[in-house]
Amino acid sequence: MKTVFSLLHSRRAVKTELDGGVLIEPHEKPSRAETILARVKGQALGEILEPEEFGLDPIRRVHSADYVEFLEHCWTDWLAAGKPGEAIPAVWCGRGMRARVPKDIDGRLGYYSFAAETSISDGTWEAARASANVALTAQKLVAGGERAAFALCRPPGHHAHADLFGGYCFFNNAAIVAQAFRDQGAQRVAILDVDFHHGNGTQAIFYQRRDVLTLSLHGDPDLVFPHFLGFEDETGEGEGEGYNLNLVYPPGTPYAVWSQGLETACQRIAGFQPDALVVALGVDTFEEDPISFFKLKSDDYLTLGQRLQRLGLPTVFTMEGGYDVDAIGVNAVNVMQGFDR
Ligand code: Q9C
Ligand code: ZN
Image 1 (cartoon, protein in one colour):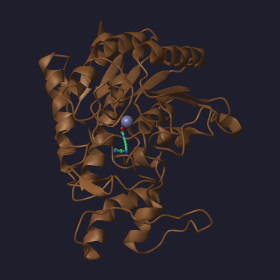
Image 2 (tube, rainbow, N blue to C red):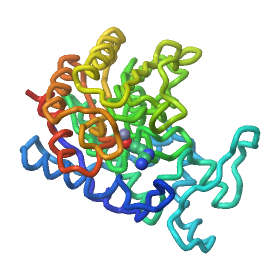
Image 3 (tube, protein in one colour):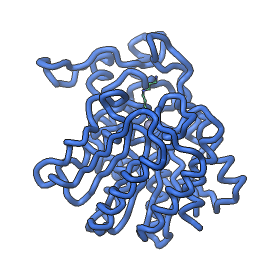
Image 4 (cartoon, rainbow, N blue to C red):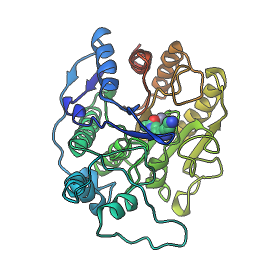
């Protein structure tokens, strides 16, 4: 399988993540991508390609123009306002308040976000753009006849809504890929999210649509991020009713249990008969992940890849979460190798 990767990911290197009332070194850091790339090379998974430049149009098919513009200028606006640290949202439009875009940068940071752990600094815009280009290049490979491609995206994307950043995400790479397939003539596309966290952004973007089926297996949002979306009674709305599936699991869930949900999801995908599949691949389901509570083991990712391969669909993998441990490289590449064999 071919991998798409851009060194521009390293332009996103914030110093801070608000966690537990203190600013820690971010979990979502540059070494994540280097670790995974090293494993891709070490296993000779396949050719490694630089992304092409797709411009902002395919991003704007999923994200609002004002949100994209906000992200482009956020850091310089923050600096111009004389702020001493990194840009961190600290105020939101609470219940009963007015959802209008303020002029002030503090107000706009809150308007365009849903969480405060995701700091912004110099280079975030460039890295997020490159990450979307990585995803779109993988989409182009698969649209051009490759059975599958690995978009080694960083920053990740699945938490980003049409006009909200958070959960380490800015542009929803998986959604951008699905929309690109649709715009190139695919009738139906499925997005399967196997990251530990609910793919809230992806769900929200396609919630009222039946052309893109969204499915997510994740930790119970009653207990973990993103807390306010991802419950099993969210099944889609209007035209999209019946085209969103959430499968929620408790702390300690091993592959033997998680894989039953995977089977349910795969059967739903097969019944949908999509023209393409996008897999939002987080490996924070791993037993040693520092911010998660599932108990998947490294070999389980091979089995996951094999199951996805059996769907028989043109498939784009977008890299999402997975933190701190060296095994994120093994685990992510195991999915690809399980798929390839
Ligand atoms: N104490 C992805 O996996 N909350 N994002 C972290 C840590 C935010 C995860 C709390 C988690 C976001 C792409
Ligand atoms: Zn995650």
